Length: 189
Image (tube, rainbow, N blue to C red; front, side, top):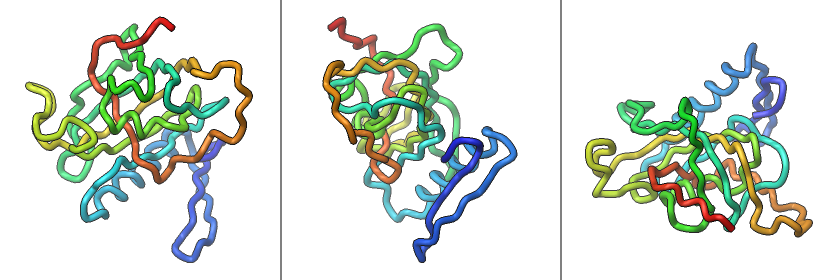
């Protein structure tokens, strides 16, 4: 996904293609469908699928960085988005988390790496990277694949003063994380 409602991709012959959409919403919706198609075409989902929707600005986040995120989580049902099981989008409180602290599901820990402030990412998380066989009583059935749209609103880098360059790795094909309902695990360091 590129600025000005463009998406670019490579085909099987490594030729670069660009598509321009009429609106940001159309570009974002297309990107979500590409990620869902990737999920549906894989024999077994064994890692998190990530698709950037908006890239954001600044340095990519890594383990130890603290984030405040807005998210929505859906059950993956009938090869697509099912019912919403959790969201903080229209609430006053953002989810605070520290990457690598183990306070959120493994899918989120992996899937959010490299995100930047203002960035939005679509994650499809297999059960083993989410709540597994136990699920979440009354909300997430056992062995559920989950889908999240995550937006990074605030970032506090662990290494605030280090001028490390080249850390914003594109994680388009890396596992994607998903938000996990948890208590406010934001440390005050």
